[in-house]
Length: 252
Image 1 (cartoon, one colour):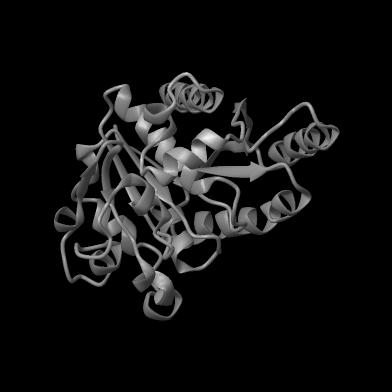
Image 2 (image 1 turned 90 degrees about the horizontal axis):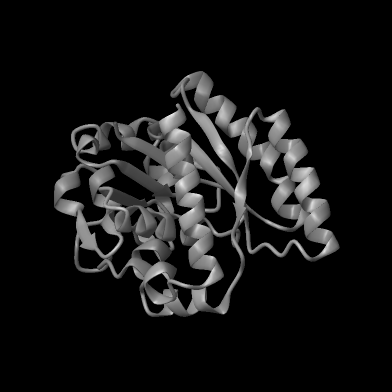
């Protein structure tokens, strides 16, 4: 059964795109069929995956009914991707229906084991479409108070989506990225996040993702950390996170 997972947090710089890309890569290495959807006008997931978001159709054309989902698919090392570019920047003015993406995915999603949706750093119509299309959402957090403060706004958006367009949406878990548990700040942040997770009736992933230079190098080379530096702590972290995601789905 296909699992559609959105990766969301309206705060930028918390590792949404990095997580979507490397989890997709880890799943692909485990021989799962994976589709990535870039819903961020910045197109960062498209770039680091090596997709062409200039000369070929993107998710914008799909949402505008100019091309079919199949016409927008591109093959990458980490699985299929539907890319994005700056054309999505006017989405809040152009699109109003929360179920638009879900309707587009329905005809093809059963061809995949996992669909991972990378969302923009906002709580606008694109993120709402991602949450409406998803079975669950992963919320990445960096170890700073601003990252945690935004969780309540995101949770309110998730609750609104549950009420109006996707009652079965669940929170897969909160994920620490760029984490260093040797600092007092990170340890205090961990305690606060676990308390927030309890209030949201979800969990904090056991896996912490460490920040690394190798991750940025991999992205500059348009590849994933598991291919670029397979023995690095960050690659190990994303493989462990992927194992948690798979196990959580099996349990469900």
